[in-house]
Amino acid sequence: MSIMDAPRFTFSRRAVLASGCALTVTALTLRPASATPETMRAAIRQIVGDAEPKKGRVHLEIPPLVENGNTVSCSVSVDSPMTQADHVKAIHIVNEKNPQPNVISVALGPRAGRARFSTRIRLADTQKVIAIAQLSDGSFWSDSADVVITLGACLEE
Amino acid sequence: MTETAQTPARVLVNAPKTAKRGDVIEIKTLVSHIMETGFRHDTSGNLVPRNIITRFECRYDGAVIFAADFSPAIAANPFLTFFTVATVSGPLEFSWTGDNGFATTHQAMLTVA
Image (cartoon, rainbow over all chains, first blue to last red; front, side, top):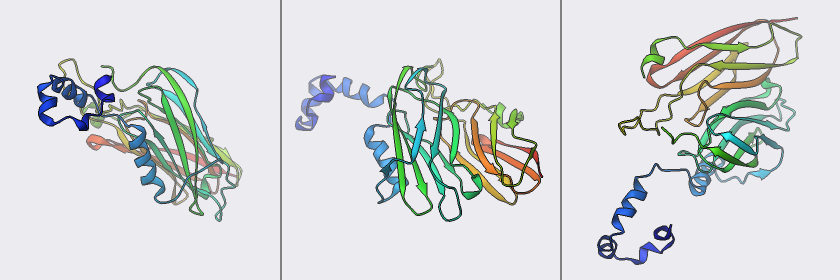
C-alpha cells in the first residue's frame, strides 16, 4: 500500500484532499481497528507495569498452523511449585492482530495446585501470540508463539 | 440477541466425583454461548452488538480458586480446563456472567476421602 508507506505527514492537508487520495485515506481509516504490535505492547505494559517480563518458565502451547481461526486450542503452563510462598497469581494471553490485544486473563493461586489452563481462542490473522505469567514475588515471565492462520476469525460475515 | 440472556445456557462440567485429600484434580467446563465479538456486520452492513461472557469463577471450599476474564477473542461456547487441590468434600461452584445480564451457575459435588 503505497499511500501508507509514503510519509503522509509531509503533505499539507489541502494537498492530500486535492490529490484524490482522500478517499483512499478515509477508506483505510474506516476499516476495523486492529491490535497492532504497538497496541499489543501497550496492553503488555498495562499488565506488567514497569516490570520487564523475562523469557522462560511459561509454556504457551498453540498449534503453529491453524486452518480455522475461529477456534484455536491453546494451553499455558508455568513452572511453579504453587506453594503459598511461590505461586502464579495470574496468566494473560495477548495477541498482535485481533481487533483487541487482550485475549484472556486468568487469576489463580496456591490452591490451583498446578499452574496450567487451556481454552479455545479466536485469531483474526497470522500473528504472534504472547502468554505472560505474574508470580507471587512480583516477577513476570512470558512465552510467545507464531501462529499461521488459513481462515481468520472475527471479520467474515 | 437477547435469547441467550433469557434461555438458560447449557453447561457441561467434567470433574472427578471423588479424590484423595491433596490430589490435584483437573476440571473441564464448557458453556453454550455465541460470544458475538461486536466486530462483525450483518447482511445489511450494521454492526452486530457485542454479546459475550466476560467473567468465569470457580468457588470451592470458601474461596474463588480460579477466575477468568474473557474478551471477544474467546471462541464461541467457552471451554476452560484448570486444576485445583482437593481439600474438603463439598461443591465446586461455577458461575459465568456477561453482556445483556447473562448469568448462569453450575455445581459439582466432590467427595474427598
